[in-house]
Image 1 (cartoon, helix red, strand yellow):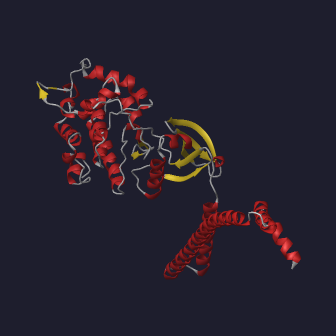
Image 2: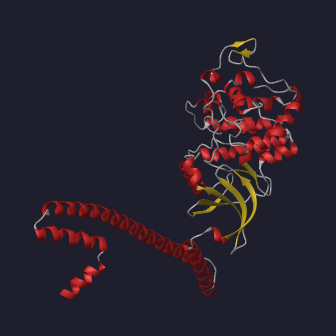
Length: 425
């Protein structure tokens, strides 16, 4: 018995043994025993609560783990039963049936082993950098075992915490994992280390819409109709999952090797800091002789479409990657900070379509603050240059997207009105 007691005491933590000794000491000497016992009981109770929490967490983890294992085993048995039944009904020899079952069992075992493997940055060979943002960078990478090419988004945790973007990143990861759509970029896996979060995504070699517009300046109406229609499908696919993108712009419209469009960069929008704008900047004001009352400040010099296009080309890349960002595609209700819904994504689509056909965004100005004022006072500043020679149908669609929230096309989903105007029918 003594040997068992000594063995048990050896296993106890030293701090606990000291606490036990302290409890015994005062009571044996008869000095301060009551106070010592109270402190010891409090320490023991606190320790007990922490231990109980750890035990409960461990129990929950183990239960969930084995519940998932049993579920997978049951599903595997069901798949085998269904396969055996289909093979029995088919005109297949018994030898071929056994060979096929063995082959599929081998593939399933390999897949399960792959699922248990924890991915890390060391599993990939980093290649060219294709993008850099406020939170990190995007690189082309090659998986070492398979040789497959992916895009690796590397996000700095400390920067996300500092900017309060953790929930946005979680939303992006969850959406990409849940939504299976050909209209949005696919997420293959995600992992993290102490400093960074990594998203391994589909690599799209066609570049983005901003690069295409920089190369072509202006698209034909047929080309614009194609890309607008695919953007409508992309926006609708995320709206069906009750998700608002809030940062739809040419940089986030990627092209695959066949030229088809995919929507990307969910939940990582770079909001414009509008704290310097005053209340009167957001007031529409009365329209007197075509000029709003709040536009008393000197206006920018009038430019022809060609001059405006050249100015936009010069500043486009710099504005896109500045710390402030460009507000050219942000809806007025977002800037006003009075609540907004999915309709804000359709406004962004209208601004992008305008840029495709005219060459620059509809409310472009020399500085972001002026652009914000123009967007909020869109009734005065939305104009179609005659040199662009837009068709009546194009003007109609843009006007139905760049308008009041209640009247905006798409506010009730991408129904027949949207379909017919975008050429999706």
